[in-house]
Structures are given as C-alpha cells and as structure tokens.
Length: 198
Image 1 (cartoon, one colour):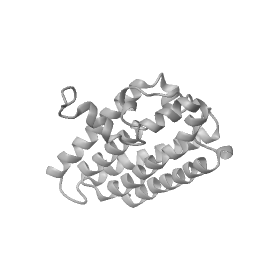
Image 2: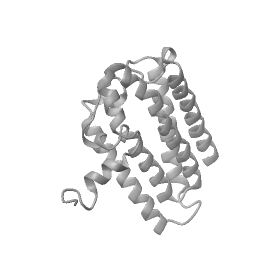
Image 3: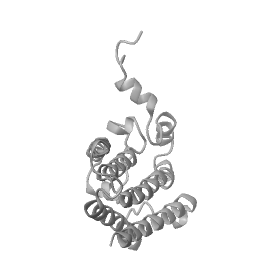
Image 4: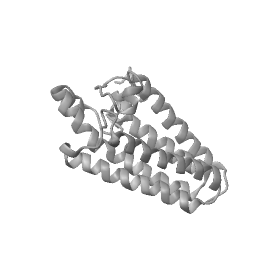
C-alpha cells in the first residue's frame, strides 16, 4: 500500500511541476494561478489533494520506517510547528477564502510578507518537511521532498502575475524583500540588537 500511495503522491507532484513550469514559461497557457473556477482550477486542487492525501496516509501508516520516533522527531516537530505558525500568520493577511484558494489575488507587504515574498511557501515547506522528519518515515520524506520542490518553483509562476497586476508597486517590493526568506530583514527585526544597536 505504501508504494501505491507514494506513486500517487509523486505523480501529483510531477504533474504540478509540469503545470507550474508551463505557467512560468507561457503566460498565455498559464494554468496557475487559477483565478476562476474552471477545469484548471479543479485539476490544480485534485493534484494538491492527491499529494496531501498520500502524504498524510504515509505519515499514519509508515511512521518509524526509517528510524524510531525519538529526538530527531522533536526537531522535526519543531519545524512543523514553526511552518504551521507561519502559514497561520500568512493566512491571516489574506482577505478571505477566495484568496487562499487562488481565486482572488492581492498584493501583501505586511505581516510575514515583510520577511518573505512567499511566506506560505516557506511555511508549507517547513511544515511538510518537519512532519515527515518527525514521523521517521522514509516514504513520507521522499514525497515531502517532491512537495517542497514544487512549493519552491511555485513563485516562478505566481510572481510574474503579481508584477503584471501591480506593476511598479510590486517591483519595488520585489527589490526589497527576498523570495523565500529575507535573512537580513529577519535579523533586523528579531536580532539581538533590534533597537539599541551601536
């Protein structure tokens, strides 16, 4: 069963890579962002659910297949909690479920968007990878690697849409904030000498 689940999840991830790459290369045939409920919207979410369903079932059924749950699992759990927290803070910036689903697009520069142009990517990557490590499942880790890879390429399709829609405002933001994690901004905000640096 685990081989079948892994195959389903990896197939979903591979198809998402293809669709996202197509979106990044050819704006006329862009299946992402979906913007409206169409067959592309349905396909996108079907593939997301195939990856998520396979991943969570692998977590439940293959936990401990690489190593017993222990100290390493605590570290993975910490990454999961941090990633989930970033996702909650990011979703709080969105203006409703339509934006979360990709049916509405707005430019954001506050909250976690001050430290990443794509905080949902960083949050999802941390949560998925952390959960796979916490479970000690090699099957979940393989699928997590594919999912994280897909998350990493999504901005290549999304950012041109934002630049097209918001022009100079987005370009200015893009020039100031890093794509995934802006370490300099994080250090300025949370570093040891936040307010009293010499």
